[in-house]
Length: 141
Ligand SMILES: [Zn+2]
Ligand SMILES: [Zn+2]
View 1 (tube, rainbow, N blue to C red):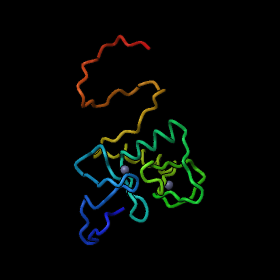
View 2: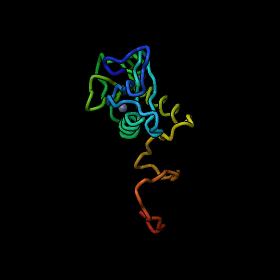
View 3: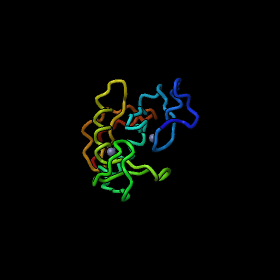
View 4: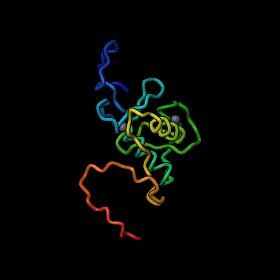
């Protein structure tokens, strides 16, 4: 979506808002990319992570009868995700999956789909910003 009052002939990055959290696009943040949907709808990487976690890993379904997916504009029988903050928009499972696949392929971004808490940590190549000197291998759970 676009910020109300956006100059259509001169759209700025900060005029482009995620439909699901209304945060503006920050092109300098490679971890929060924006995916474009139909009719100027947008989905940020942060919301995609939340949606992926809820729908794919936790099996939630927040679908409302009659509310089409904001990205593909289809009313599907798939599970849908809605944010608590803006429950009038929803995102279908297919768009979540497609978005995740597309973003992971895009080398400009560092976005990675969330890993299930129950899944074995097979790919530990994640940058940790916070200092953690804990690389002991003695954690057998
Ligand atoms: Zn968002
Ligand atoms: Zn969709």
